[in-house]
Length: 154
Image 1 (cartoon, rainbow, N blue to C red):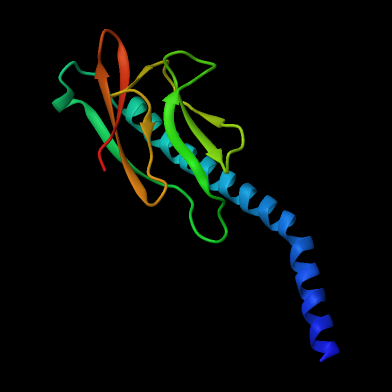
Image 2 (image 1 turned 135 degrees about the horizontal axis):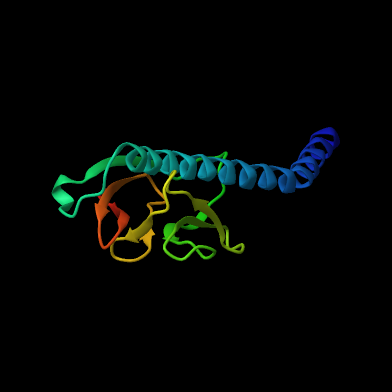
């Protein structure tokens, strides 16, 4: 009986000692996966901008759809917020902002490709789903200058 109690106490102590490392690894994995999503969006925007000419009619504009998945599961930290927002360091640009478990918000700048282009987040900041994929539509329009128009469609 004493062996069982000691075994349980040692197991609980080992688990308690390893939890900070597990949480750190989960946060790092989550940040890495969000960064991969930002890179995927940047490549999609760059592809539309590099291969197209902006037009004034949005129905005729070059466009693409990107599926962004917020990391979930045991290997990912809980996210309070994930959103596409205006870039704090570049007005007219776009960033992917996220907050893990009440920690300070972090932002990842999303580039627009080889040409300087304005970004229009239709309807303001675009909140992404934290429980599944979000479809993001990117259009390249001429809105008093080349503009990438971004909207969540699903």
